[in-house]
Image (cartoon, rainbow, N blue to C red; front, side):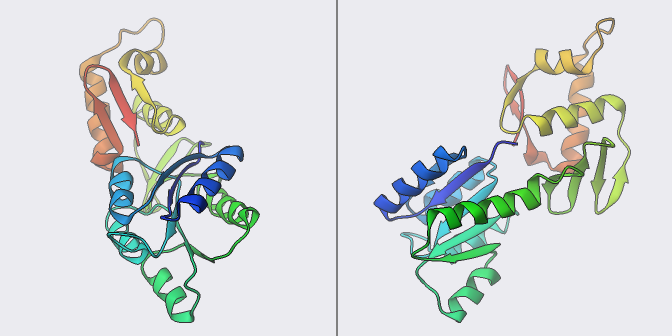
Amino acid sequence: MKTDVLLVEDDIDLNSTIVKFLTLKGFAVDSVFDGQDAIEKIYEKQYSIILLDVKLPVYDGFEVAKKVREFSTVPIIFLTSLNSQNDIEKGFVSGADDYITKPFSLNELYLRINAIVKRLYHNEEKIIISKNIYFNPKDLILYIDNKAVELTVKETKLLALFLQNPNKVLTKDEIFDYLYEYDQLPNEASLRVFINKLRNLIGKEKIHTIKGVGYKYA
């Protein structure tokens, strides 16, 4: 799975340094400099992890985390010079998964990111879709609230295809080639039924229609 990172840091030099370092480590990094842009980015795109400074223009990091937690469970690591016990507690209460105080080494940041990403996304037994929904790629079973959900073969294959290609636009032809055997005729009406069922199960916002092209899981 590709690791998409959003860095929210208003120190231009530090922002640039972290972006360059993480890019060299193989991460795909977007960066912004204030809380408002951060929230808009997180609305637009599904990230694997958020690196969030606290002292930010417009909205501070604590406010950003609280707003993000209203619609997303994406992991958040705070990067901040605030190191009092009260600040640390406030960070975790607002939705942080980890809290790194400045100054910190880039290698420490890398290790912290990897620890969270591996724990949440690289578990071979399940692919996390949201807080209470995951997919077991080994048994090809979708679970909601730890209960198995019955899907047809094609619905299961379609869900697996989306999960294997996060944030990628899949054309209808690509989907048809994956779902249908050579002796079967693709059916666009059936595809819409499959899509609607998956949306109702995992969240309508998870599967986007790309008009005239296909669909994207994000």
